[in-house]
Image 1 (tube, rainbow, N blue to C red):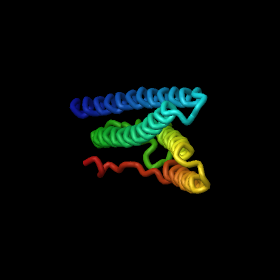
Image 2: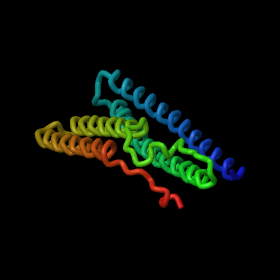
Image 3: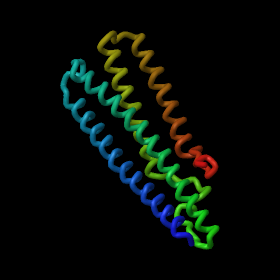
Image 4: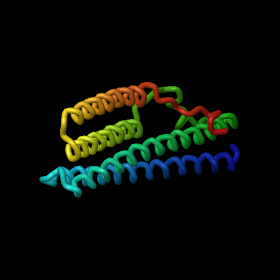
Length: 180
């Protein structure tokens, strides 16, 4: 076995592990911040104040930031796994069997990252619905606004179902050719 290949394989695993630690750190930070904003919003007695509205805007921005970060981190993790798999294949061709990351190749699994992506999407949609509902009750609480809210919730519900299906069933993995 070539020492350089072994070194590169170990560095690829270290890079993947470092990225996983960053994922865990930042996802916890987003979750805590979203929770704090949620508690803050529901601690306000009068929901039609400027402060309550600003908390909703911040919550909505934080929720969507969390979802986009989770999605980006997931893509990076898949990319790192493909780099490690590529090194495992190289070591295999040299006679050293390495199947740490290739053991799950081709299998669809439900992972913490996928669940985090889905949950962060649900949180972002919930913040968005709260923001839309509060905004409409401030500007004009008439029948027109109720219909708009109904259709917004219906579209969001359909979006949630589509995202659940996409994340849990149709999630595609990177192929080694995509990282060359």
